[in-house]
Image (cartoon, rainbow, N blue to C red; front, top):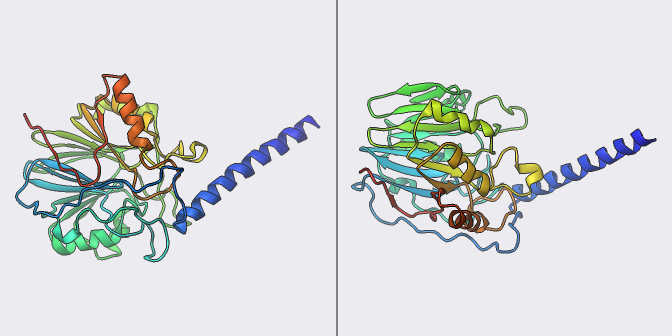
Length: 314
């Protein structure tokens, strides 16, 4: 009898968790998922001026999209310029802020880095448009995603396995594992890899983690990727924790990732734009600011989309 009661309790807990997941998933799918009270759209800055002559800066463009200009190169991470993170234009999670800049107005892009194949990170529409405007553009993608890009007539693609390293005349690149997953449909879960990009240029080192839960193994990365000057760390899509904790770091965990990796200066990404969870809009930023006030070791910032952050190359 005791075993039966425990089994029924376990089944009940499983059904509750599964119900929460389905509720969150379908609200996100039909764009009725809103964060908790305090759900006003995030503030942003529109980039409506020419960036072609500007160098040594970065700008977070929303979600995990980061435009980085360094040492004469223009790099973009996880570009999504579509209105929805979805295989369809009429359904799926919708961005809550307008485009910061149109693809046609971007400076010449040399390299695109994709962290994994979820639709808010690998947006085919954006990649095709970038190749149209930049015929010599090079795409760096996780192992298993090259076929996806080639099926849409994209070219100049290099796949990376975890911990694979590659150098060209401009930079050294390492693809590092993160705590996440991949899928673009119902039957391809984890058939391609997911991860982050450690990049060393002549003057600076960068780490873009795309999307990840917290993992104590990050502490071991310092010996493999060396010192990181600037980190782009995801801090959103973390509530409810029963569902999201394995795949999305909350702000406190984002700070811990930065400390574990001894990153000199980190910036929060993957918050306040496309909602896959229900934390209040500005909660990630408020938590980061609170932690920073209490711990002087923390050098973690949350700029708004469209802010131009100059790189200090001294």
